[in-house]
Length: 115
Length: 112
Image (tube, rainbow over all chains, first blue to last red; front, side, top):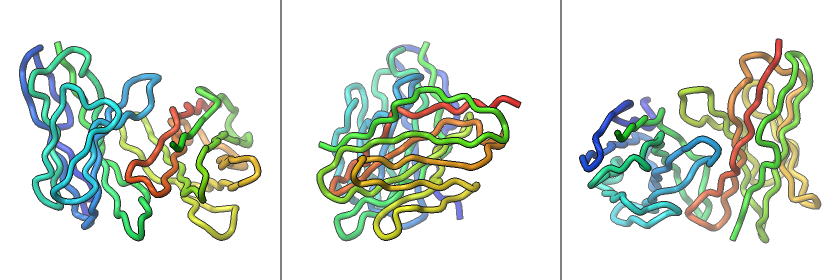
């Protein structure tokens, strides 16, 4: 049982390049999230998908786009990378039932450096 | 809007000493509360959670937390800390929202 799988684990980009972070979960969860983690800032939500077919902005969506490809997969795209997007990115998923958001299951993170 | 506050950015303890990490939440209805641990270079892992019932909850790795509604707190405790407990600890809350709210985290340093 793999849980939440993120790829790639490490990536170095030049300013202006684009890339997509992939995330897949095998727990039949309905809600998925993308966070970034920076020193002293905790976790900040970029985008989330409450259910298949829906996506919504979080706290820091500028410069990012997402796609909920199906129930399992939720990708994060940087169209034109900037040094301010250097961060560690985490994908997470959860089962939301009865109006309650349960515990989040996290991937191992993707460390992105933009030069 | 709900919020979660972890007042301590860093906590330093000696190995074998007891530990308490503080967490305060702000939410009108019954909160659903979580503690996560993040080891260096890893993702977050659930330590324990509180949804209802007994206000003292047990988690993995010998951790426990107590929900105190009167103080809006959900503090994490461990009676004897091991060097391997050095990590970042996050308190989180979810209620009716799709978006869990995380505290800023507390970094635990363990001295031998």
